[in-house]
Every structure is written in structure tokens, then in C-alpha cells.
Length: 299
Image (cartoon, rainbow, N blue to C red; front, side, top):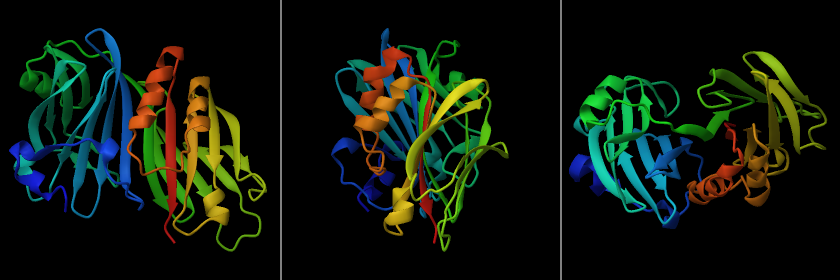
């Protein structure tokens, strides 16, 4: 109930620093997207996190600049429809950034991300740094920003998926690339020889047999003419607790391999600030795109 008073603040917004918050060890239905943007001529990373729980939808906007980290958290409450649109100002790298959102007509699927009928815009010095959603005309009118689209690049996505033996996600493997249906299948209940299958658009692109001996590994697949390296860790499914999760990473750049090796991806509940920091450190080395999936079994 810590965030309940924020419902009654201006626009229902609470500014919080999640790097110092306590860690929730239960699985969360959330999706975090990282964009590489330009702020005052310098590169910065903006993290957009969409979440969903029994109360309703949630939205967090985090800006990771060169000198500090700050986070603006927006909680969307089903019973506070007037709070589903608004704005908030904050500072990053000595620059004022205005965040505008309109989710009053947003349509959601089974996941926490809105599918259509929304916009989320970040503006600095009348320039649109990042714009998401299909209501672009309304966004420019509301923000008063120069009608020039931002040069933000989608560099990473982190998502929690749930299932018994099949886990589904929709993703793209590079900025502005086509959307693909990603399917991971692994039955570990009462099976003597578990097998891991990964499909893209119903086509099997990877199969791992003798999974008890190969519970961690990597393999390269070809999607959209790109070599995608797949890394997996299903140790928790086979030898851990029922509440454990498996981790999958799909990456298009060698720079992301350092991320996998240097920071345990099983720490799935920590907010992505240190994660963002590592992306910022390596972004000058052709980062490419990385997708990290935390797969939780519903027993």
C-alpha cells in the first residue's frame, strides 16, 4: 500500500528512485523496453516499464543520464479514469524533460503493454525525444513539440512470460523490424528426457535434447536475415524450486554477451538501472538488440 497516497497527488504521479527500493521476490507481469535517445546532443537510455496486477495497469518511465538516474512512476488505476492521461516534469543531466501520456482510450491484450489507442511522449526543449503509441498527431498537438520524429532506437526488451509448458511472446529482433510470434516449449513434469523447442512464427528454429545435461547453453539461429544468438538457462526448472524461473536471451550483437556474463539474469525482480548502465557503457560498440525473457511455470 506504499504507493496508495500517490493516487491522490497531481495527475496520480509519484516520483520515486527504484534503485533503492526493496526487491519483490514474486513473479511480476511486466515488460521493460530500453530506448537509446539523444538528450542535449548526448546519448541517454530511457526505460519504459509496463506492469499489470490485480489492481490494474502500471507505467514507469526511467531516464538514465550521464550524471544521475531518476524515475517517474505513473500508476494507472481502473477506478481513476481521469488519471489515465496527464503530464509530469523532471530533470536529467540538467535538462528539463516533460512526460506526456494519454491512456484513456488504450486497448490492452493479455499482457501489460497497450496495443493501440494511446501515446507516451518525452519532450525536452520542444524536441520529441521519444514517442510511443499510434496517437502521434494527438501527441504533437498536446506537447507542442516540433513535428519532427525522434531518432530513438529500440535496443532492448525484458519481459516476464507465464505458462505450464508453452510460453509465448511477440517481439521484433531489431529496431523497426517486423513483429514475430515467439514460442518456447518445454515440458519438465514427469518427463524422463525433457526437450526444449523454440519456434518463430510456428516454424521450429531450435531444438535442445538431453536438456538435463544441457540446461545452460547457446545456439545461433537465423531470423530476417540476421544471426540471432540464443542463450538459455533452465536450471531452475529442472533442479530448482517450483517458484523458480528459466531465462532466455535473444541478441543480435556480441556486445550484449558481456551483459549475460557479468550480471546474473536470474535476478529478475531488480529494476533495470544497473542493467541500463551496462547498456550505456557498451552502446558505442554497436549494441544491436537484446530480448530477455523470464519464463515462469504455472503449476
